[in-house]
Image (cartoon, rainbow, N blue to C red; front, top):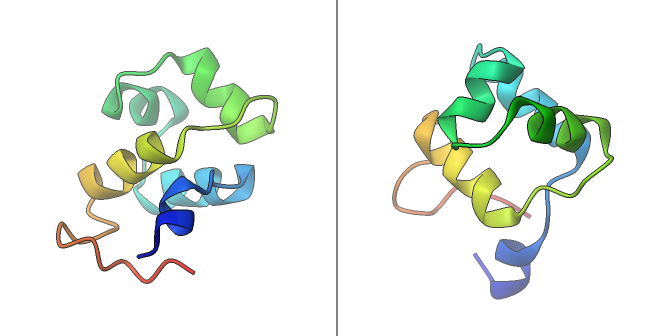
Length: 74
């Protein structure tokens, strides 16, 4: 993964799709990364930009990206 890929914030659709793929409610997803429900809602609505590192943490904690960092992001 290149530096620019790590710094790219996820789209609201990507956030929503990742949460749904994990089978979590917005409340559960927010708790997974120690965020507020309102913050999660704002990320999914596109009202706020989710920090790339927080999205990476969510993907790792929900097993959607392997721990070796090779998750095929483009």
